[in-house]
Length: 250
Image (cartoon, rainbow, N blue to C red; front, side, top):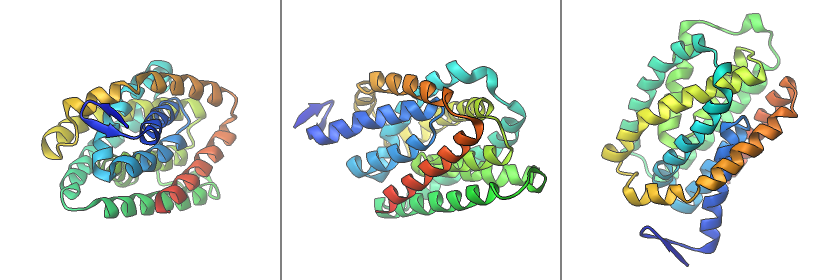
């Protein structure tokens, strides 16, 4: 057993925690499917709701790496459409999270991932002019992103759905997502501290021990993405989404 900042961890659970940091770092520099694996991995170790608060500071640390590397590639016209509705989604998620247990948490996460995967695959079969690039499309997915990022740090599926539907190239996809998550993750912090009480000084100090792994993951993510074509990147996101969905449900 390892005792860190009031946490009693087995060697296996601490290894899972550090692996989560590595995966989060990779996800923030473009390997988005890794975050969908990190979420159920941490949830299996710490529980659904507690893990969401434990993961948030790790995500924010990783956001810094993603924004630092891809900040020039952001498409702000899409962010302006998404931000107001994402805030609504965060507020809904905060309220809902007070009334559901860990098992229902995991079930909701699994359903969200499977649904997102089905829609992303469908989007590959339609042409750009059939994609609804209208305010209500951004509204629906903005609310979905805000809700899912609050309930389970799983907004990656909703954001991938929206940005893939806009047919953004690889770097623009990553840069736009990086700025979105940095802003929304900071917005979530007060709710985790005072409403859900899932972030404390001890949990934050534990998160800091994962910072070297987050940095390593960010570096590996940049190297991996450089080797992918835009089309290969799109299919990689969908494959990793499928893996995460199976991991979550079973």
